[in-house]
Image 1: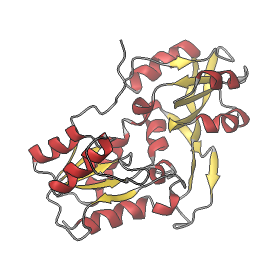
Image 2 (image 1 turned 30 degrees about the horizontal axis):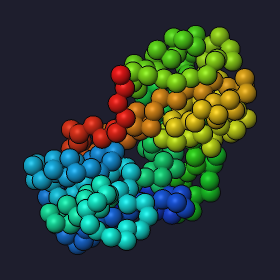
Image 3 (image 1 turned 90 degrees about the vertical axis):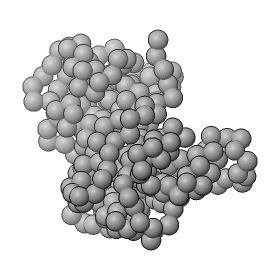
Length: 265
């Protein structure tokens, strides 16, 4: 398998011009004409993930988060980003990132995966964007939908923990006794809080809210911050399934490494 074939497929599904202006999705390390033996899918690229690739014979890592967001001026190995890039180059391991362009794809995108996990129906984008590349493929930020039936708010949170396989939720007080309409945004989603409120969501599931931002719920919505890694962990499964769907005989597997840098006690 030539790397260029895999990239072309991924970028047909999630075009690079769907990414946000600050992002760095695309090929980070590697030669597009190189032969790919097998791939590992991960949320992040760490030295441990590269070691795993080497141990398993994989020479491609497909990650959600780009290891490089901004220019590197030195390669001394003093910083973990430098060490990761240096190790990848030394060992001929390609690194490809599919980040906010996959966030902004509504069908088989990051937020659609979350919606499927928690059982939302009739979903649509919180902030729809015009589809620049493929008109029939809608894009936008965030997602909102409804549960099949109303749930008492505490039961909903316990169900959310179970379905998203998480141990901790930071949340604000509920605005009503039941939950029906749910907004989601994988990763850092506080910027979508006004849209979630305007859309009439009972709860907004996302991550990375700061202390003072929780007050912005303004008794109009319940915020459920489930953690950045936790909200996007099933993106690994999403990307792997996309690859298998197109290249059924290609060897691709999910990383065994938990790359979440945050621990809970």
